[in-house]
Structures are given as structure tokens and as C-alpha cells.
Length: 473
Image (cartoon, rainbow, N blue to C red; front, side, top):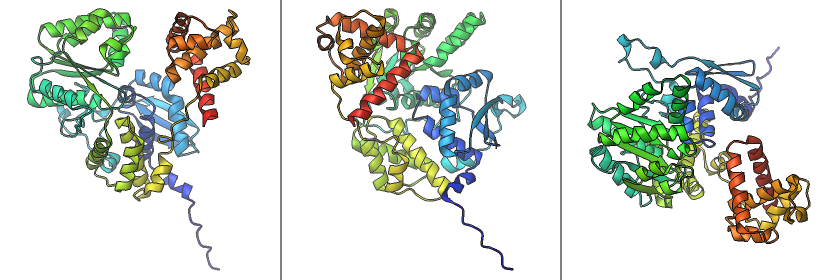
């Protein structure tokens, strides 16, 4: 009796061929779209999948603090991303396993840790971070693409790396998210270490600095923390806008700044806005930030975006067609990090299926990232949708009623007119039955401040935004 031919595997069965490292790489490539680079580096460094059994994923993390943060802050995002790659995955757990580099004895501390197969395949060096400096050797001046949008910042950074503490101190670099600020800051640190091996360099995101201050206060070890930071020769603080509103952290950083500056130690700072535009920042800190060199990074032009993509591919030793690169460069115009994330998605797909993605595949894989811009909405549309969301009539929101169930939606509508349409405060006041512009200012500031600590309100506003743009498309 002849044997039946084996059925050909379905396309989805290829997912089963994805090993743990490849699966986690694909997850990281997606997650970096959704969070800042500072958070990505802080919370996802030294993490990996250690088991995949019975529809359950077990992820190793370097310490209990990271475990708690991933469980409480990012678990939904991680599970959702894993499920999109393998719909059999139903649960994610985390286990503390200190990284190998922390467990090595002093006798073997100089032995190199072998690369994983995945690092060899994807040349993914995001997590090769020096534990002493927090610097990633991947970020250098050599692979930083210079264009008219960033040449001043690059020139200032290069000068600082040649003469730390003697020129442009402090150096303050600002620009929108994903334009290369972190790359430039770490390039400074790496170049200084290369040129001045005895100098102590520390790169730290502002959120990490804040958490260290909080921990020091809790453990009554603030003096130990002060000593740690005052020993540094070059302090690189990323995303300083996150210090806004944190009084104790600002106070500690103010004293650290003064102690280092008085000894001609180099201070390098970055932010998503200029010092003047950072809200709730103490004037004494703002004054010091403005006391050195301030350089901005704007949006790259098309030619520079294409050059950046080609540089990234060269680093990763991968080739894509010119058509695919032009598609990415044309559609992702204001975020270099998103461009790199798009490349990582395509690279993960190529490694998984052993086939270079064509333009049709690229469009499909990147459709979540590259979508047509929403049509412009009108003020009346926003007011109408806010009213419907809270089961009110449009006329009720526009009245002068002081009832709580009306005042709140009215303030949210004012806030959305300001945020989504950039309407002036006088215009907003006029839309609401001729109210004074100060009423609009108060409403917008109140909602903006409350969003920072009220997740429920943020969810409501995001749902309203979805309805606004889904109806306008």
C-alpha cells in the first residue's frame, strides 16, 4: 500500500520555524515604534525569550525593577505584539536572570561574550551597552549621516568630543523625537573614551536619573548618589524634558550640574524642545542650560533620508532594492528612528523567509507605520463627536452651564481644538458661545496637566481622537 504524500505546510506554519531569538527580535523591532528610545534602551536591554511552551512565553529580565516595570507598564504591548506574530501565544511571564556580564568573575571579566546567532544574522547591536558608561558602541560619528538639518549640532558635538569641558559647555541639543539626538550624544561619549581613555563618561536618560534619585531618597542614600555623579568627567543626560515638574530631581541635578561645571567637566544635554519651551522647569536650571551652546536638529530632506537608510543597511550587511528604500524615504519623513524600525521589520521578514521583500511586501509589512494622513477635520466635527461621546447634545456643550457633566466635556473639546487644529484661544472662546480666551486657556491647561496622571482620561481622549479621524477619512 503506497504512502499518502505529506501535505504541504500552510504559509502560517512558517511561523513555527521562527526560533526564540528571531521572535523576540521581531517583537523589539515593533515595540520601538511605540516608545521613546530612552525607554526602549532602559527597559528592554538584556531581555530575551528563554522558553516558549504551551502557548506561554517566558522572558528573562536583568533585575526585579525591570520585571516590575515590564509587567505593569508594557505587558499589554508585549503580549499584543507577540500575538500578532504567533496567534497561539496567550500568556507572557517574566523571570529575573542577571545578565552574564554581571555574573562573570573578576578572573574572566576580560573574556568576550560570544555573539548569538541572531546578532550575527541581523547585526543587531542595540544592547551591546557598556555597563559602566551606558554607552552603545554602535553610535559613532562615522555612521552619523550629516545634512543641512543637523550639521550645526554635529559640528558642536565633534568639537566637544575633541576638547571636553573646554568648548561649548554645556552643549544642549534639541529636536523632535527620532531625529538622531541620542545617536549624536552617545557618539560624543564614545569618541571621548576613544581619545581620552582615563576620563569617566556616563550616559543616562533623564527618566533613569529620576528613578535613581527616587530610589536614593527611599533608601536614604542620597549622599552616595551625589558622590557617584560628582566623580564623572563627562555627563550626558538625554531627554531632559522629563525633569519638568519633578522638583526634587531638578534640585539634585542643579547641584550636580554646578559641581561638574565648576570643575570644567563636560555636560551634554538633549531635549525634544529648546530650554525656553520646557514647561515646569526651574528658572535656575533653564538659565544654566542656555549658558553654553544650543543647537537644534530639524527634519531631514529626502536625499538625506535615503542616505541614512543606505548607511543603516550597510551596517546591517543587508541589501534592499532602490524602490523599497525610496518608498520608505518618501513616506517616513519626520522620524529617523521610525525609518530604522521599518528596516528592522523588513530585515526580520527577510531572515525568516529567506527572501528579499519586494515593494508589494514592503507596503504590506509597513502599512501600520505608513498610512495616508487623515483628512482635515473641522471644529464643529470635534465638538459634535465630543458631545456624542458623553451622550450630550452639541448645543449643551456650547451653553454656559456649570454642571459637572457638561463642564468636563466642554473642557475636553476646547483642549482638542487646541491640540488637533492649533486653534487660537480667542477662536476657541468664540466657538463656545463667545467665552473669554482666558476660559479656553484654563480649560486646555487643566486637561493637559491632568492627562499626565490620569490614564482613564487619556484613554477617553484617545478614543475620541479615533472617532474624529475615522469619521473624517
